[in-house]
Structures are given as C-alpha cells and as structure tokens.
Length: 211
Length: 211
Image 1 (cartoon, each protein chain N blue to C red):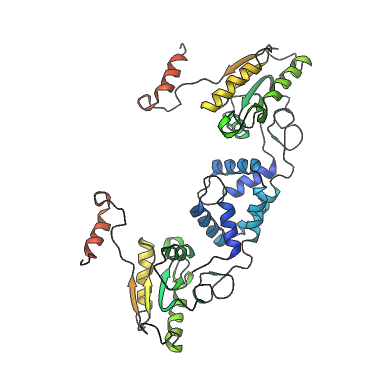
Image 2 (tube, rainbow over the protein chains, first blue to last red; image 1 turned 180 degrees about the vertical axis):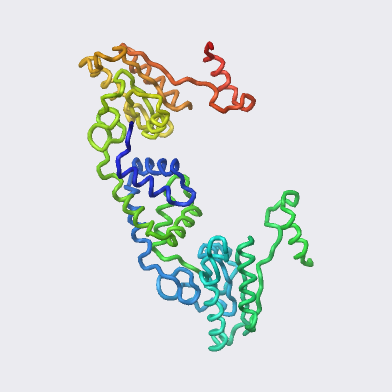
C-alpha cells in the first residue's frame, strides 16, 4: 500500500478542517502547494501564524480593529447618529463597499440560534443597549448633526435567525428613545419576477413605494 | 472607510492565491479561522511550514517518498513486471484506493501541453525509458514472476493532453521490447446511456467485450 509522507498527511488533515474543504479538495490543495513556486506554503503558513497579531475587536462597535477603536468609530466624518447593527464583520465590509452608508456600525458576532446554543448572552446585544444609553447620556452626537435623534438600522440577515435577532433587539431597545429601522425587503436588482419566491414577492408588494 | 487590520489582509491575499479560492472565499475562511477554537490557524500554519520536511520524490518512480525510495517501490510484494504511468501523485492514490492494482508506478508530473509551455523535457518521460532499460539490462524482475515481460500501462487522463502524452510515450518506448497498454475507455459505472457523450459511447462500442 502506498503511504503519503507524514507531513503531507498532516497538512491534508488540517486543510480538511476548513469549511467547504473536503478530503479531496484538501489533497488537491496540498499537491498544488507542493509544486507552487515562490514557497507559497511558507508565506501562507506565516500569514496564518501571524493572523492574530495586532488584531483586536473595537471597544465601541466590536468590529475588527488594529487599536482599541476601529477605523470607522475613530473617523470624525462618520455620522454619529446612525448605528447599523450587523451579524458579522464581513457584513460591515459588504456595506462599506456600497459607499452608500456613512454612519457607524455595531457587530453582534452572530445571530440568535437556540439549536446551535447561541443565546442573547453570546451576542453583543446588551452592549448595544449600553452603547446607546452612553451616547444619549453623554450627548455624544455632535451638535452640527442633521438630527440629534439616534437611528438604529437593523441589518441582520433575512433568514429565520436574523429575523429573530432583530425582533429580540427591538424588545431590548424598546424603552429607549431611539428610532429603529430595518433594511428594505423586496426584489433584488436584476431579479426576474417570474423566478422570485412568493415570500419575497409578497414583501416587495407590501413595501411598494410611490414614484 | 473601514480598513481591515494588516495581518488579516495579508492572510486573505495569501489564501486567495490557492486554486479555486477567490477573494470572497478567502475572507470567509479568514473569519472562520478568527473564530475557530483550538487555534486552527496555528496548527494549519505549522503544517504548511513543515509540509516539505522529510518529503522527497522517489528516485525510481518519482512519486512522493519519505526516503529515497517510496513505499510502493520498496514493497517486495508488488509485481515488478507492471509499471503504471500516471500524470500526478494523486493518480497513484486514486489507483491505490481501488485495491485492484499490485504493480509499480511511474509519475510523469504533468502532461504534454505546448500552450502551457510543458514539453517532454518537463516530464519524467526519458526517465521512464532509462528505468525500463535498467530493468531489462539488470534483469530486475524476480524469476518467480508470472511473466518476465514488462508491461507499461498508460494511465494518463482521458483528455487531449493525456492522449498526446500517451502517444508520445508510445513513440519514445517504441524500440524497447515492452508491452504497452492503455486504460479501457467506455461507460462509467452508474452511467446513464442516454446522457453519455457520443465519443464515450463510440469508444465503449469499439471496446465491447464478449460475455
């Protein structure tokens, strides 16, 4: 029987632990790395070992930061009366790419999912309440802002967990004097009406706007 | 604008160099690694840095080996009069998994592909000829073998490059007294006749066998 060298087998096992990478893909990647020039395995290996170096979570919004405060929270040009609540740091990146949002963020680090054992205490929900209370108490919104009213935009995913999380946050923030909004639901751009599921179509109908 | 910490950006860039991994998958993997327990990033990083440790190519068949000779070539139970020529080490693994082949291998490390700049000198083709000449000259096939005739099984891929490589090897080995065979072509197991392409069906018809 043919045996692979041990170091190769270890690498295949480790790669197969990544999401979406099965044993077949793991061996293909390994053999690619064996032949790839420029010592890709070394640069990738070092990048992995160093990945957590100088990386922390922002004390304000729990996004990724190199210092205690992330580049969005420390940017004086951002609108301080808008807080967009997202599930993951990747969602911040997605919204930033639209260049359509100039407010702040709040990263929950997940969504409520009782089946996976993720409850409110695993998410940054109470931290969101404390943050809002602090902003209102210390009047942190600059006076030149368009409005002094804080708006919380719930931008959790449009699935069961995201909906449940949004509903829970609405309850938690209920007693605070803030405006709470939710991302619009409707037809995706480029969507073909014929192929859109009926729930999306129903939401698009409900949310119709005047020209 | 939101900036990711530098060490995270470097990791995303490195991961995106892997085949089949685009920038989106690379960021998803990175954020998975950030949250994954057991320091997966460290074990994977170390596995990558160590991957080439103690790994060499077999001096006989150019498969992977921990010593100078791989586990197949050094196995006295393998049939020494059979050499299966494959493109990659992964092909050796695939054939070994069938448990149906007990001979030796010869790994070419690629297939002829002029467009990609891969010519005969980039492959282990002349090494195959030298290997056969050595076996014949030094009578390396044990006397208890079923036959003293060497059989070379061409198991390159069933695509244009694989076919071209097989044809080229037939030419190179032409003057040697060896039996050269090719893997059977036909319907894959579980294949539905209705959906099989016509070339495969034609080959299956040509290669039909008596019950």
